[in-house]
Figure 1 (cartoon, one colour):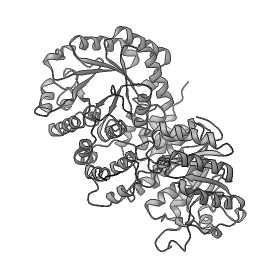
Figure 2 (figure 1 turned 90 degrees about the horizontal axis):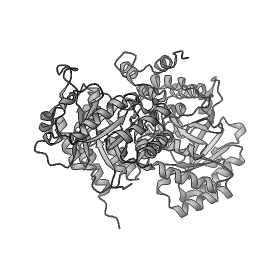
Figure 3 (figure 1 turned 60 degrees about the horizontal axis):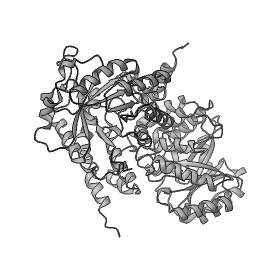
Figure 4 (figure 1 turned 30 degrees about the vertical axis):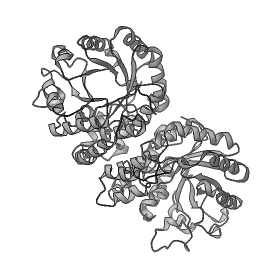
Length: 316
Length: 316
């Protein structure tokens, strides 16, 4: 698949940081930036810009805050065309912490929001756009969005927001390709002035195929992480995206090297990837937090009991 | 997805056996059979029926030969509606080793063949059909088949063979969903009197999504293995198929138990699953044998060098 407009965004440090309190060492982050730059990846997302009034720097690593000065240390001296992205959660940021683009190493700010928070997301994204940044709104937990509310959110985003890209985010790894197709087509029908993006999670080993499905239906922004690192089951492996896309600007070799040298040792310290408790939360369209807690308990391999507990809530 | 005609075949012991010389202990094979029976899985494939004149029982476990007496030991005393399948490779079997169905615990015999061996496959499958077995022909290495030759093979299978099912087999884990769709539609167009099946490999984490894709386009036989065990990157995880299919006859719980108790310990002894060398052979549409050799060498994590070696063959 070669469509020149397709942009690849790596969120290794940002989504991977959800598994280690955003506490990656500088040499690791620089190694990722260097490899992505050599590989021709379009964007690298460093982490979240959270307010230090809400989260303590004693408890979290610096990629929970992604200050401009810390980002400058990462990119210093490395030749690159890879743009820097940061993510912002609704209600966790002081907008005054975002300077005008011309004073910052950041190129893109992505606002993550549930459908119910779309008005807050539009406020933030327009603020960042006015400051000169490229912007996206990432609609989280899309598998739980009610159809009429999602339609309204997409219509608002089209009319009221200055975002360049609207992302469909399969937070729970619950989508099969038929629903991915349905959602991307829906978004393309409503969003005419912006690009569509897709961010998958790999609970059911479908992050890569759903990413391909979104590309087939004309999404032009896709997310991946090196060796699939990310919260719980992780994300779409970047190396598979680079193997699939035929744009000659991409070069998989530096990413293969990075996996050998950095990700294989890291996987011994941080657990992510295809594990049955994450597959179960994906099948049941649940947040993986219960599965993440299980993996830290002595019952980590008691899959059947975990499954029974999840489905054994009387619902009326 | 609930389509009553869809049949699920588990080949845990058969494809998993490719990683341990088919040397599974009887209690393990019985545990798999018991779990699959409770889960409502339609078929369980025990292994290959190979001639003992060609392979020595000293070098291989009993599931390389799958004699009727050994199969009877597995199923003895376990209540089950799960039918037994065995696989046969062209040119590795003495047809006299296959007794009439009424004297055997086996219900189905699957003949694995490359396109070039389709005449031999038809001879075998008709012999087995005449003996009373359900039969399939599994067209291997489909990603390497030339279109005109594949068309001819499918036309022959439709006209000359008594097989009940024709399988599309992605031996190298090289198919993306667009090509899976193309191949399943092609097969459905030519094969009118038989069912179509799909068997995937998971090199690029696409075995499950390609299985779904084949179901969408009306394949009614799909293969999986428990926790994805199988040669190299392994197969489509059975637990994901059971999570996807909505037929109330299926019950995922016994399979979750089996993974906890048997597959998690086994994974410490036998390596399978998503590993970068297998992803590379999948991307390049190559047999995984080079990657399997790499994983047994001291260079097992030298991914970039492995990639360079594979693409560095001058071809004219």
